[in-house]
Image (cartoon, rainbow over all chains, first blue to last red; front, top):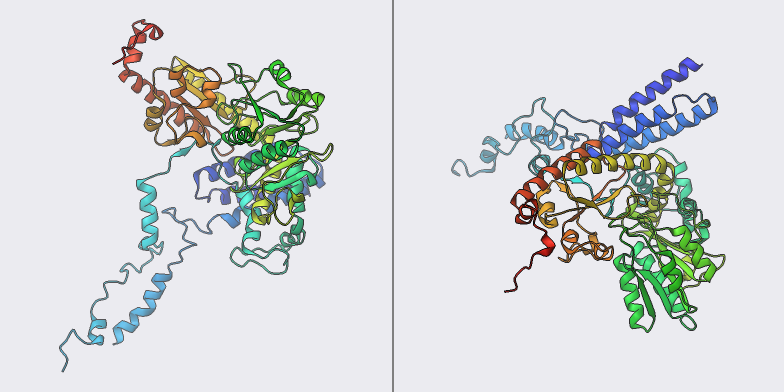
Length: 102
Length: 456
């Protein structure tokens, strides 16, 4: 039981750090990474299962909050490609056969 | 019949130069024109480091998250979903039902200062709260009480409101402060007359960061039966405040100083014993008749969220800001001689550091540090060329008042930003001092005060 909880906590921690690293703004990104690390470090020795449950719940909610505010996918050039899904490219791909036929 | 090149079909057969040619795997839309513009903008003009948290603060992402449903959804309708952001949770919408009285958010603000929710009035900011408090209380009690006391280091809106009261026939005493920026309590006690209605002293000064002895001032005012107003815009959420311990009757709160939205603030008005004020904004009787007008729900939500976050994070933020402030001050003061910190070194909020660099002009230092967003003096006086009245009030010399810079450290400041600022500052001060004739003279041992500058 405790081992399962520990792996869940680690998984949440890793996911939160991964999502926090996606903030486009330097200040928000660093704050999120630092705050997540410090929060998990501070609560490292909590034993009471109810408290752990409550903290995990808070963690999931914070993770959802971060996910709402960061781009879905961050590409190599650092731009938020989720916003511009290359609609123009797909549109031009559709028009290409049209121009070739006439 | 028609020449080639004239028909529609032939035009379409021509190579379509307007199509983006690289339709290959590089679908990162690097060819998309808007994205290019933004990337170019960011590469050519990176934004400066923000070290001016006393002027305003960026909104905390958690506050934005709390506000979003109320911006894009109709309140009181918890069953619709905001598809733009994919809200799954309906419990977020349930609180919308209670939005009518803004009760939850009012409670969040009240809890931060230890008040009752019914004592909080939402306003458009600390400036409006200050105006309401000072003009409102003074005008309500004007039949018997015609005297108001304030200090010389208050915010412009407080001083301006007092000036208006003076033109209406009130008597206003502007108390001087000591060299460390703190108010002299005996002087305050001596200044209180039988016809004093209000004393207004700000909790934490926005220019020098000095923390006034509010508990003692509250004690004095309560014993003399005078209302005590404090402008706590810079203090709320940063230091623990208790309106009952400190015996405060009116308190101004600003949203955008505590990582909340701009355009909202609050005024705490005590109910027991009741503080009456004449409202500035009349109308439908909202907010207990003290401030009519629809409460901006998204902004009120933002203020409530900012207050509850501030309450949770106060300890963590205070430790971190103190650490960063010490780091900055140690670095700067150990490398450069003749640097003076304005304001009391103990009784202060650590995040607001005001340093005066002798023999260096403040504006030129600000321009030299152009990739750090700093300020000399407060935002509301930065447009004028005069040195800050706060520095003059604490008795700083003219030349030192001109050469002061305010460093603001907040929740989102990183160690790298602080280190960079300190190094840049040291480098530029050295450079400017090399060029300064006053510095040369002082190095040779000439006492600058003894020089008789000739009058042409």
